[in-house]
Length: 482
Image 1 (cartoon, rainbow, N blue to C red):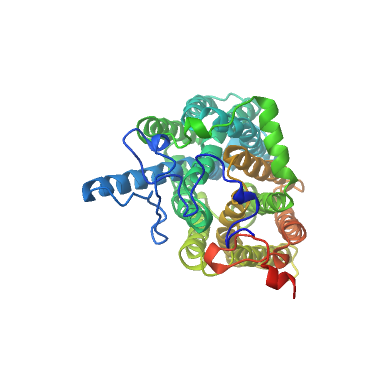
Image 2: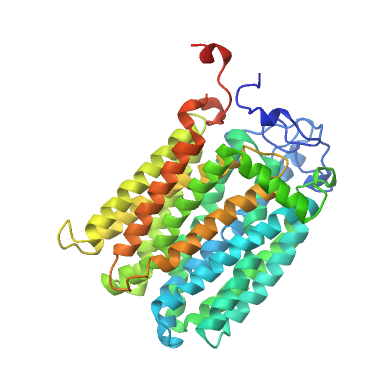
């Protein structure tokens, strides 16, 4: 019988796999993470999931250097996961201006968001298996370099069609940062430590939605929407340089997967055959669709319907992001290890559904004439609940596999971005003068996410423990016999 906190699948430990205590190795040796001996004892402090662990036989100076390196790696991974909100949210306050500048309707301009999301979805399918075969650094650096070029081309786009094309390329290349950051986390952490680390990443990447619209709104005071992409290009260059200099390889050659495209697709097929993994993946994808319905529609809803200025919209958007980050930290610092991840995830999906229902009642006029404040409050609650939902769907899904972290990360990201890309044009299907489509898409996505979670993951039928953060394991024999 598997141990508490482990699945039957986990009993098949691959060579060089992650020890049971949560890290891939006992610290960062001089040659980088990938050079660590797989049999080095590893320890990770639950109270400090942001720092890579250090072995017990090093000097205090070496331990301090390891902790600093771990914090820097955490910061870099947070920057990589912040790529989507930076590319999306800094651009949001300028959407109404783009419609005027390029003489295009709002629904067409929203395709620039859809193109970027679709690119990120497809790009992850390519980059994830590549990182399992060739390691994390090489695909990441290539993707970041192309991302910088594509972002610069967005600033020069002569038409909305060209902008959609360049945004698609930007998404394809930017996918490298998203998928590889998750794979690196899976290389280094497991179980409760991994769930906490994802919540820590949300603290870093969640700062991007807070500051990005604010920066975008201020950029529009001195220049036009093209200046937003100039700033994004500069940020991309800085992140590429930081990865080149300071991010070590985390996947040792002995743990890489051979084979070509056939091997990658077989790995993905085996993951999708896992009903529980598929359930978490789909639930996370539709939760992300509710989030992206808000991202793509809120500039028009708040500014055109409820009269908010670009600066007011930026402040409200940042406040909602604060709620998401705060809930994520409550999840990582308070709930994980005390309450099963399945229970926290169920709570988050329930709150999202209630908030979306309230928005629908407001937008249809059932609650009477309302202003900006009730809408802003409902959106704040919805966004905050995302902090309980998104990190836990990722952690629970990745707990199902060790051997194909890149492929699993690709499937997680692809499902989220493809479903989110579909949500974008739907929120504008009835025009830009009603908030009903946004609320309908959010409610439908939340309901589908909840149904998939309950039907496929079946959390009530699996034995979970607070000590493992809700990791699904077979029920003990004595409980099965009751």
